[in-house]
Image (cartoon, rainbow over all chains, first blue to last red; front, side):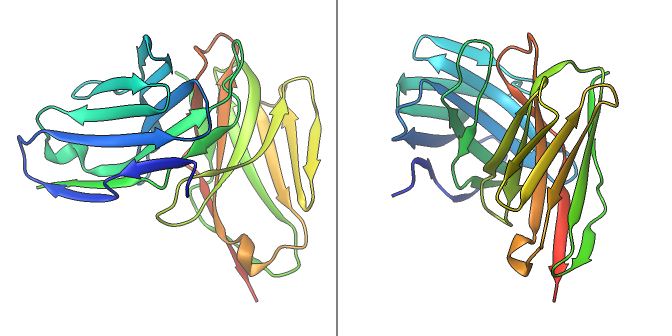
Length: 115
Length: 113
């Protein structure tokens, strides 16, 4: 089984719908991240969490929200999906220390299409 | 503004040659720099991490250099193989950067027989 599991792997939805992408990990890491990847723009950070009570916005958090239900679970929600949120979404974990992120362990990605 | 630049054009090389990929950055003071490999439709996979006070790091056929004066990292794959074909991403972990990595857009490497 993968260390970082994302569900669903693929989703097609319509504008205005609420969507949740889920991420669970068995790495035992405290730090979890959500990135989106677009062609030509690379990976951009949406939200990150250092523990259940510590959630922080990344560079492109508008239109997104997150929930850290447990150390192992970190969900990303699109309250009202719009077409420019069509992208490949990645969840990642790290065993960072202090001011250092450390190595990121990525899930396999969730491809979201908003029509 | 802060920028991380990787060559957007694909790099095509022959099997057995050394592939060299470049990562340039501006307006950063990175404490660490990382390199990842990404295959189509898959999540990135960590390869190497190099600290700002390290000039070079090696792992098997991989070598990374980090020049904070030139604000550049070079990533080398020696004796390249078709299986090395992938997109390679560099990522910077800034001093005081809020504990988060910022990624370049990646360079696609194609190793031909």
